[in-house]
Length: 298
Length: 162
Image 1 (cartoon, rainbow over the protein chains, first blue to last red):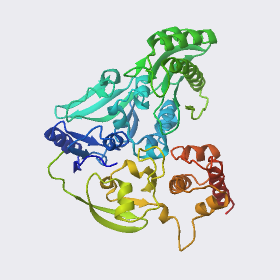
Image 2: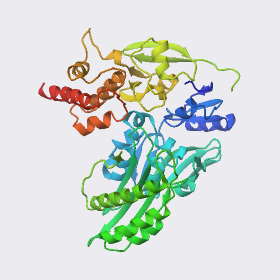
Image 3: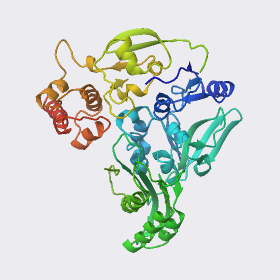
């Protein structure tokens, strides 16, 4: 299947890319790794007149851990992030980056593209909500930083203005004693997650939950924070009863759609199980346990 | 639809040979490899980035060539299944697929070979889990995967002895 014809442009700097996208107008689209955009074009669900290939722009593939912030450049591919130092120090990042689709897609797909696509089921938006991340953008009006919760406004929709591009994402470096886990349920590696959950928590001696953030993917049009479930855990000594109450609260706010991936009720039950598994992994990681790859496949 | 589409000149090294061609921007890398260069070992299975039959290595990394434009590979090195054989000798991975019955109809095999070749370049001694992860994006409808995994394990084990 060929996409509809388009003009191809390859700017050499971010500034040039922004200028080009602003001048060409809304029928022009940026192309990074193409792992979301190209399938859409091949299905002719979109027919842009111009593609601006930003895939090779310099200085946008990086990870940094400085001054209490971890920052990941927008053009960092998932597989590259999964092998980076950040993935070693923050295991929840490796869960997400190393679990996206398959090795081939992880070679090409980028974090900036994933967050800009804002698919309700895709991994980075849910993960970045778990870590309370900020999205850094650059556009014709200059640079700005947007909280992830404000960045994704609706399904497949972001706060990006015409000509504006994501340049990086950043979040606070988790403190000592903080552990996290991100788990998605997938019917196959190459398929989108059915539903997913991220938990990042700090556990004090005596197994007391000091701080926790929980975010859900595929549970509504945009990633959803489980604030009631966080309240069920915070300040409490963790035991199975506390976890069960939190799982009830997680299931209560999830509104997964009935679709080909499963019924709403099936997904809600699935989410309970994934949440308990993620919570267990996060707790053990907060005590520095090494636990690899956690996604669940059908 | 835009009125006039200019072709784009691209340079690509495929299996060690340099090529320069003018292509329409919308030409997919897999079509370029098969139709422009006549290398039909790379297969189109699903054409939706799911099945992995079109897997090639781009600067060493496994990619699905149906989900990439040829213009994006401008200046890159591409390795296809035809590039595995050296001096009329099958690559050890190809021999191992044959010896372990890692194929039946053979349609997925080029993709399986390139995905596992990329794995072995990065990690010469993968465990079973790593092999399964590496072919998670490749669909095989004949073998049930077990013999493919055995074939890759055998190559990993033989390079350990050497």
